[in-house]
Length: 402
Image (tube, helix red, strand yellow):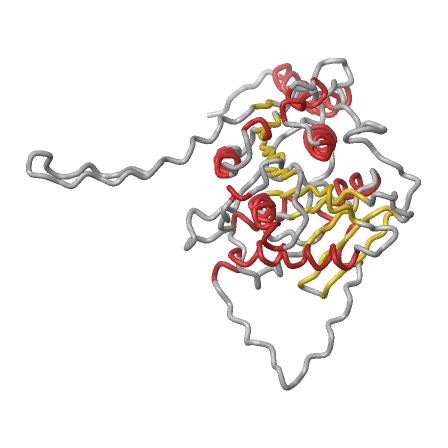
């Protein structure tokens, strides 16, 4: 059977397809642009005229990258920002935009390469990071340009780096490290459910100094796991009062083009200028043949999972946008300033600028950050001896976890 189609219908159909293609091309051009990076101040560009020193410390596969302005440090030294990468992302170029911002605003950035991909177990990552950080700060102590200020230390962790950041803060006094004034846990993840499970095992976070600010940041896309992990970190840092903690949520916004999407990988901001493969690490010293290295023992939890491989790919292709400038970089800058001044988190929550995401080019406001003060951790229950079971009472009631 043959269908007769009116020539006008075909023309209209072609015109409709052409109009749709035209709109797909034109609408992004007409859509409002997102807010640009501030020229200065929190989240801003910093001093673009200053060169950034990029150094490798330690040895290949077990070293740290450090970044700081190529200029004499102030008399009091430089604030230290410890940047802890996601699992499978030991190259600092994945976070180069953020690192560049921090270095150009005067910070000494230490990027411990705590993971040798497919050779490091998650259970060893925190100890590796602590050892590398201690060695880096010791080596840089006498450098007139780096000059770390041990009284102004902040720790940023992304995904699996977030629980490692909390562990460093918990272990700092015991390990002879400076006490972090701020733990900034972004999209936390990779936390083991218990000591036998795959992932980063949390240390005793109740040991974190009570004067530390603890801030967790998540997005509203792929948010469930990060939400649970963020609240767990805030809950287990029980020695830190609730007025020194904040829970932040960045909201996606598609009002303009390109849209802002707050995913797990959105804090990454690739900058090839920070490619770790181009930064030379000191050669390994010759090995004493009389003391051979212990044989390498592979474990299944060293390998990246399929989900981790996908995240690594997305992180390595992420580009800086307004979420970086305003939701992550700006909030960290303001939080670090408050932490170093000894101010509590209430001052940040009451600061309208802290949650403000500015405006699209047409004047429409970008969705603000959600800022919450977590509930105070319940006091530890006092253990009471259970009454002896009797025939009248029957079986004693089973205890429940708090």
